[in-house]
Length: 103
Image (cartoon, rainbow, N blue to C red; front, side, top):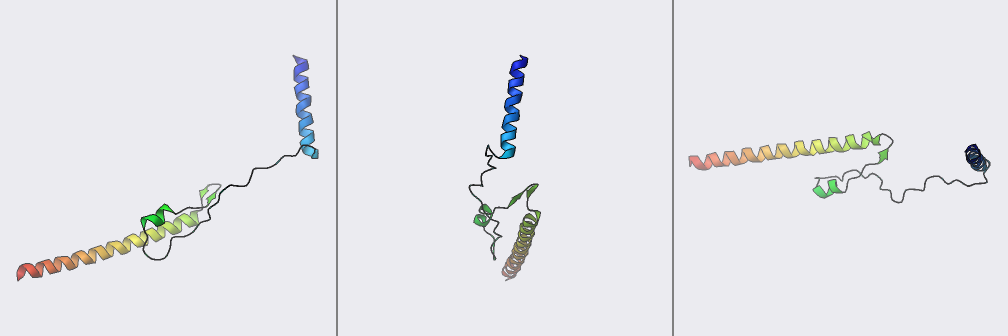
């Protein structure tokens, strides 16, 4: 049993030595096969297709916070703009409905 363990130890030491002195080539990780760089949301109204195609760069701790924060800020502004427009249109419709009902 000791002979087997010594043989394994010698093999491991030999392999480690071969790697260190460069006799046994060790390749690192292969390059990523696909990469998609971050492309911010396009100017103008945001569509569902824009969100479907949205990709963030990945980092050690997840996604790049500046990219995610920028998209969230943009979506917040877009939603606020649409909410204001909806409120304005509803008030116009209510005003027209009242004027028609009084006629």
